[in-house]
Image (cartoon, rainbow, N blue to C red; front, side, top):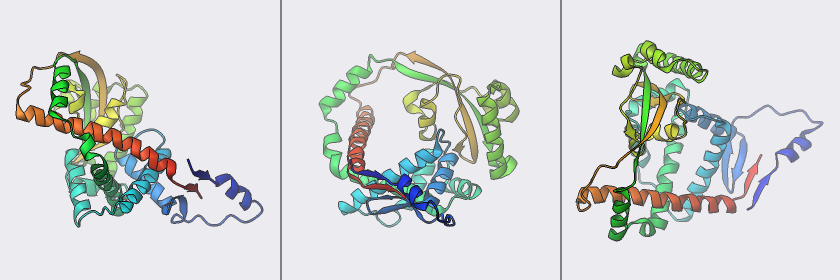
Length: 306
């Protein structure tokens, strides 16, 4: 792996000389020929926060931006370019998958002072990477009919993981985007400190589930909406997500329990069933290939912290 970290050297070189004024557009990291500025990192942190990401957001932002650079470079090396309008269509897809409209996304960006270009870059890297993986791994990822038969046989006996969830839904219309964000963060802190979720839901949630303490019907883990899936699957029973965007507002989700359920019988010959399974297996396989390929690209990259 050719990774060079020079922060210590730069710090030693700076001893005895006046510190220059911070320039947000100066390079913080270079990845081969790609540059990540301090501004890029701050903007990605803001976007991750708006998407409800938890943990060390600075570390996650740097990781994502570094991966984005090698993804874009791989696409360039393969001669892959997105057609005109692809990014706009990608943002619409991003919004739709999360039960939002493009206007909802725009309002969140404005409320968080996130540049449109930051969102465009986030979506573009995902779209480009999709094309890279399709070009390299489509044939190897496409399941055969025998693969489908085997997967259906296993699914017929494997218990389904069911998640019991509760929600607090906070519409922007009541307090405005900034006010809703402030309220959501305050509620998240209170809930993380042990406040009663059901009581908070009854007081603040504007979903029809509020009167039942936000309780939702159990849902199979693999059917969670994309904007909730990653956050919820990282939880242990009793924990809550950070505020995540929903159509016209924000939501906080609590994982209240996990159970196992016998699978529902399906017709293994049904074309719709087989096509749905084909898409799922393809996605799982190409994602796995992509993770390995990304690690190869990162291992070969020259990454310098400025």
